[in-house]
Image (cartoon, rainbow, N blue to C red; front, side, top):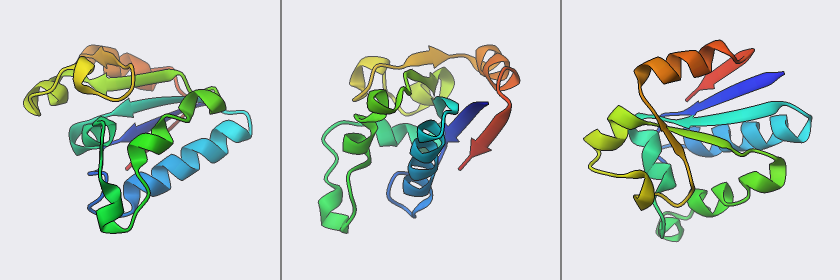
Length: 117
């Protein structure tokens, strides 16, 4: 099964980002081919040097560093949203491929399941 996870939630405003990450790692553990697309405020999950300890939470960026251990190597970011946040791919903690709207539509089309949070 090919699973696309779309992370669009602010990393620490609520638990959606953490729950999505947990679900993604479980799916990968059980053999799903997982791809990850960051959109909107979800892109903030990719910023380096997050100080989540002040909020009493685990750092999402450190957890995302473990993605290759789960064979999750296809990581994408919404090019338009990245620009709206004033960021470039080099500003992010992980290597990502930036996609325009047509490329994102094609990405969604080749997956069996899509989960967005």
